[in-house]
Amino acid sequence: MESPDALQVTLPSPLVVLDDERLLRHGVRLLLKRDDLIHPDLPGNKYRKLHLNLRAAAEAGHGALLTFGGAYSNHLRATAAAGRLLGLRTVGVVRGDELAGRPLNPSLARAAADGMRLHFLDRPTYRRKTDPEVLAALLDRLGPAYVIPEGGSNALAARGCAALGRELRGSADIAAVACGTGGTLAGLAAGLGPRQRAIGFPVLRGGAFLAEDVLRLQREAFGGRRGDWRLDDRFHGGGYARSTPELDAFGADFAARHGLAPEPVYVAKMLHGVFTLAAEGAFAPGTKIAAVVTGAR
Ligand SMILES: *Cc1c(COP(=O)(O)O)cnc(C)c1O
Image (cartoon, rainbow, N blue to C red):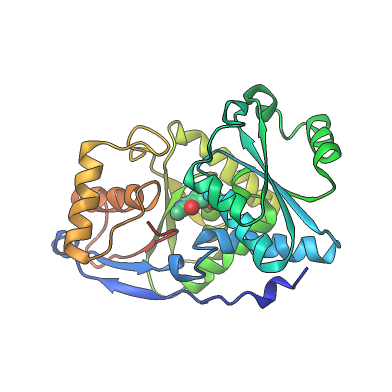
């Protein structure tokens, strides 16, 4: 395998001012942290979460990666791309055996085109994927591999995302980020400076439980709770990959005003949260908010 350091990445990612009268009215300045520009095939937090895992896989002499995700997982797609770029075998364990033998959706088709071997797992077994016996059976069947958990979030992923927080030191009061597994928030918050704080916007229902996961990841990665962070779970818009007319209208309006259509599954929900909080008067005049653009449309 090639060293992950050989990947051509744009880091630190650009930080750009985005003036919006709806925020300026409340004295709030918005900056976009353009992590979506880090790498064309490993955009956003996916590069940040993968790169230390790729290095660990290389150091351990692994020739293959095995990871998990749903049928629309950006993480599966990014892992497949990393495998192609670095000459690693990749195996994607996909939730739901009803998908086996059916035409692949565009996301899985892209992963397969990048050489990822897809293994569809029935839902009850998928739920137990971290059980040692289930994992051992998978590795037995699919070959030895460096294992990355669902969504790519482990201690190395959180450590990789701490760089995102460090890049934002001194340039904003608050960092806003969308959360799936919470790995990005865990690292981001740990990397921020002392007077900065982070707000995470879960895109799944029941996001309040995510605080436990973020805390667990921070313990594993850094030895304890780090940074000043909280979750606001009001903006999931009905759940993962779902939306509401209000959220759709917000995204379309944002695109019309700024010529930048926010990625709908994560980024639009986070921006909607930031704008709603500003309208609620949650931010003191003079507050600078860095919104992390974790992915592109
Ligand atoms: C994967 C992903 C996230 C979620 O990151 P977590 O670390 O799982 O919270 C956010 N935004 C985009 C665009 C993503 O692809």
